[in-house]
Length: 319
Image (cartoon, rainbow, N blue to C red):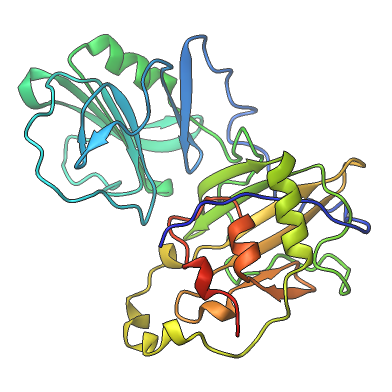
């Protein structure tokens, strides 16, 4: 069952160590978004589209209006038959699938010093199509439009950063893969103090997959839920009986780490890492590196909605 999320506040003294969150960008900074445009990101690859376009305008996986489609790893599209799609739409599809060129006519180049390969080809119904692959990041940008000027403008807008422009999440790191950040020197409390904001960064195979900024009441809910999180357990949820039979089918997208970076009024920071154990949900954890607690129903509901799927909240509490 997919679940919506939020975030929260605390008590104590935070660390000034921001870990690798502030790694320099590939470009000195993200270029300003032009007036009338909206920018979309995936794994540090950004592309601009008119602000009048609504994102992910799909029916049964088929575009039904001018749109930008962001396809995250592990995401899915409802399977159904749809024959009424309008023709000659402008569509920008940015995805982590099929990101490796398979034909000989791809031309090597670079954007912001990052290697790319690109090609042009006639699209269906005589439209124009440009494909740009970022092999190192496993990202493919597919731009299609009946107007070649739209294709050219989208191609010119492409840029690459090493940190997310909105949240400061580093784009590539394996630091959090084991479900905990480096220790922060406090083995008494999971989350100290009263953070003023937080950012969530989800990683799949070490690449930034999704982000969220957390403020206000959402921040309060998250902090309070984290500070009240129960101890870990070796008990197994009844819902996970016989899960071992499909454990080998799990992929990195099934249990990606969520790094939560908390900011404080004194400019210090604190990092927690949350990770769902898909085959043993009661052993899903949130950790500061020194202190680890269990993710219960309250905390699951308070986490930002940046994972592709969530366990049923009613299944997270013991007893």
